[in-house]
Length: 128
Image (cartoon, rainbow, N blue to C red):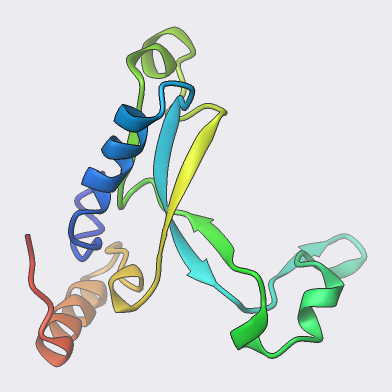
């Protein structure tokens, strides 16, 4: 967890820990923010679509979820992953998906704090 993501979903860290407790074969579990948009990556030749082309033809409501790794919101890993493999997470892992306004804030600049205050006020978000 990182302090720069203060609006993380309530109990998401608990859900990651529960995944590890309930499945001995998992090494890690972390948060993943849901998207259903088209994503592009710039390369030397221009732009490359990085979602399956067949998904772009569907309305967003019917597309498969794309998950943005969000270890700053929540991450749980076994001690062996952290200390023996010297990694934050390792396969096999589980991603706990979430969506909504809580995934929109990642504080890096002073204006991000203002955005956070606005989100809390506008959406009546409870902080834990």
